[in-house]
Image (cartoon, rainbow, N blue to C red; front, side, top):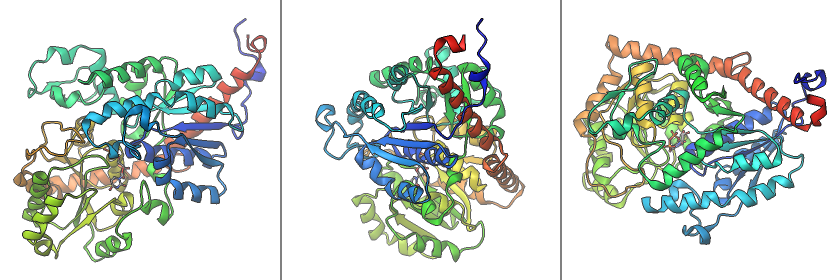
Length: 505
Ligand code: UDP
């Protein structure tokens, strides 16, 4: 018969499992994957993260601390194929790409890891039992098949944007829409969600031949995939988790918000990168501000504002009269010149702080002085804002960020739109156009921070969803349980794969 035998059904041990994680070389993917790695290792399993030297270096100290805490975790390095891909030496991650034209080279490089990755897996000890691959490496499906181990896939975003993307790609709705400015309602989603064609095209089929190819391969690879790991939690988007799982016809494990696994001051402050300016300075400044009075401004790890747009943002923040702390990851010479000439920092010094460099984002967000967040709606930042329980001003730029904005504003109702309409490429450094005007910035910040009923209701909802997020990760919470269930399912699959055929039939 085809009934699985009793022995195969008995719960196999999970502490012999070895998870191998292959994150995409972009901070928005590396950061949550490193969190997932530590969450898995904390349950007693062995974990190996495989990445390239520059990416490994950014996470070295956090992994070292995890090893010191006696977790079975390691990071192994694959050499980056600079010559073969045509990328300049040292350029191993999306935030280092010199121009949009180099995306193609990065995609090329990403295909070249298959052989060295497989060779690495063949000599791992204990042998790997599961691959958790970023969706951008569809070839890991073939490796998993050859090694006879299950593959889980991780994409980054939550179930809401993914259900939208799934629907857009399954239907021909985008082909039917001719206008680039007309809003249309997404069919078959639990809420009324409207987007324009360009806003909906940032992920999936896309408009580039190469990205379309990767997307198609990703879809193909998904067919043989054991399940999807999502950095989200069930209570945040119950209808979307269910609909997404149904649409994909595979197991979906929501195991987040994964950022909440960071507990120590060092893990919190060094997450993703070394902070350039001492975090103590920012914290000291924040300590001196009133509770919930400051707006935190940070537009993610990839977006580059043009000088004109940065100036407009500076003026908008000044006009609002509301205290702010603004992190600029990569400043530009022309912008610095403008700041000096205008004595801008002098002008705002009583209530504003500008910091050049990488923000200790979750540390800042959880400070009592923070009352609002101007975000580009990257999924990680979205969830981190949610965890902190604060309302957001939404300023989407690219990828699925416009969908995330709809989720924040229309579904959760904890956001105020800044009014960004047209997607921009993350790497376009020289667009002169100002996409969002100072008045729109001023108005959005004022609406967010006002103490009238509407603002209070938004704050209350943000607080409630923040509480739900924390509960999900605590012992007995939904994500806590899903992590256990996922590991158990992998253990069972591995036990099944290791049984001789006659034992399981
Ligand atoms: N981040 C940070 N400091 C910065 C900029 C970004 O810690 O100065 C982190 C942020 O907390 C988040 C990640 O980088 O975890 C960015 O991911 P997200 O999905 O928000 O956006 P992306 O950068 O991928 O567009």
